[in-house]
Image (tube, chains in turn brown, orange):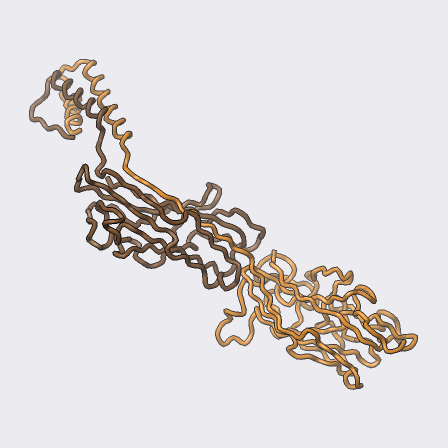
Length: 212
Length: 283
């Protein structure tokens, strides 16, 4: 909300405008650009990788499509042309006592070998239009506290739904824009040899944010 | 917003031109506060979902052994007593492990004669007054085809079984099988023999072999730390005193004369024992 004036206001004018501002601030505040953003997870929220043979250690385990994210961004009321959204992944390893580059160790009966590092985990993010900025290849997850993984980012430009190109960030929903607003996440772990045996855990936080 | 910024600047700069009261300024301060609160009350729209990933790394220590169930040594002519019998490549050991590991062999028996000696299943007569059925388990000799490359911390005379079988004329404990005298399966010490790795947890190269597998050996490699061909030899000697029997240290002779006195020799009969190969995590 912007007021322009070309002359010096007197006290009365200031008081009136201030009261108006107070009312507007109390009643409406600053409106969002989009009406609604919501993220839906239609698959399991717990993934288990169990390595119990040497072959699995060497060849790794891949779970394709283990996570499906559905993005809904509505803009029917505001119809604001600047309604855009980000989709990012934050990596968390449980506690501050765990170094930022390691998995949280839940249990181990061994004292030999190195603890696995977070970049052991590989992700691949897919949809039919390949809108993710990560491409459709597996990549290693960065350490905790590092740069979050950008699936869709705010680059200041609205790429509307239906473009079927990289970084579609305009309003849409997973039904009408199936190829752009559904994301399948694949997970891969290839431990190899030399890691300390035990049970480890990691959490991925998928966050959908309105771009302001 | 621009209005307020502009206005406040005017207040500061043109104080003399506009004589505003304190009341007016208070109202402005309230407006600014309301503005700030209004921003906080309407944060960015966002939603989030969590996925928890659990990774279970189970320790893999896999020893594949191909060997006959029974390895028979039948001594029924003089040459075999003198020169002994050798079984080449009778046992193949193949290792796959995801953790650092050690491998050793230990001579075991049921102890029906005594701990540390071959079991006597049958005897062919008494064999005379100086005969004894106490044949030490260390009379069995082993030879591994690939030297132990991870035994820098070993302190004994022989770190492994890689030496060639010694000539019968010059007995040596270089290949005599490690035996726990109490027959309880106690692992060898730093002074004894290991096939791979050794006593202690210093690290790879000193007393441990890194995780790996015979399956991933380099192309063209003739040997591997994860693959061992084991030869066996027994030399009774004549008289049959088993001159190659040595204690775990590899230097103290356990031939029948050294243990039982001059004139001792083995009682004829059928004897059995077994070799236990132990693969364990180095920790």
